[in-house]
Length: 539
Image (cartoon, rainbow, N blue to C red; front, side, top):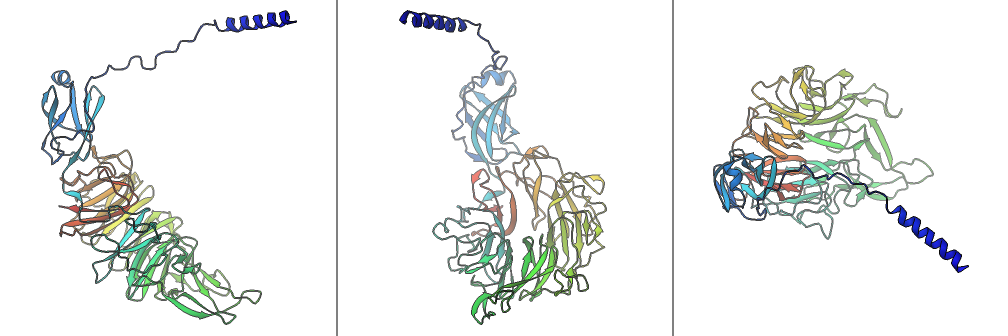
């Protein structure tokens, strides 16, 4: 029996060995035909001499293996993608001049398309991180807006964050903080737990702050707020005592009004006792606490009125039915007649004006049932302003518009390729009447598109987006242009910005230099770690 099994084992091993003798498949070398090693050796961690400089500064960088390629006319050198003039090459390195359009970033040696990375170099220009702004840790979520408090040197910062400059690690700050001129946190602002969701903006009307956003609770009040509430200037929510159906007492927000079906994205003060709120909501809502809905229990009855996208509220939260309201339209409930005008058939955003007019933009084809190309302007009374005419307007939606009351112009960015039938890709400037500003010529964007632009008080325009270059010049996420649309000399030396900018506020540094406070959702500014808020000087 052993011999039988031994024989079977020998046969099996023989078959196995025989199968191993099949011809092996030989694959082509995936690296065949590749270029030979350049034999250039450079330490990307070295510090250039000098480590920073302005345009035209001679810079020496250590490297070996450069001479053969330099003598053959094949060696080029780049500062963050911009070609530099090589003035000398030795066995141990080279000397180059910082080019006029260079910006902070990595340097590179290039030979026949092959790249060897050099060290980082800081290009000094007119835009620099402000060392007097102390909140370098930023926030742990987006910052949407800064609001300078009237008759004060302080400001409110709002967004979707629970931590500001590492001051919310023990107790969450709740999407709103008050800060001092140097950016330090003011712990005396009594916001409690703050808002339970994002705050998009805040304004002061009379002696109250009015935050708006997507929140339904603030401090101790939860479920009694509909995207807007009223605060004392101390930060505490303004509440009042009510008697319920069962004759119990409770404290509720004094401001009795809000919206449903979407959030509030902007708030525009009207005089000293009213406000216009805008967003993508569908209804105005208010609450009654002293009535019963069923089962003889205390109930909060929510009254709804159809009021799409725009509403004017009184300072107590009640709806102002004299503005964009049709009292004879069918009501959301038979007991509450009337409804707001239809508004847009798509997404909207708004920009206020000192004269009370409101620019409405976004992505829509109709407004109040009238064909409209994603942009229009309303008069202060809420009617369409027919003096503003963009013709056929953009062929796609608008991302952002900023109005400059000094020049009386609008800077517009979006994903459009044409405007009023003519080629304008991603950016255009309009006059106050809606006509195209012929003196402004946008240049070519590459690698992405803009989603924010801001006209500064001197006419300089800041533009942010996902782009990699503008007018053929490397500008990763941020550039500054002049009134004509050309890159502004000395302003475009900063390094990468890796996220959207949502607001820019002009201010001063602690040593009284002109500065801008930049807010958004980014973790890198000028190639350095900065989290959602940063201040830069403009020198």
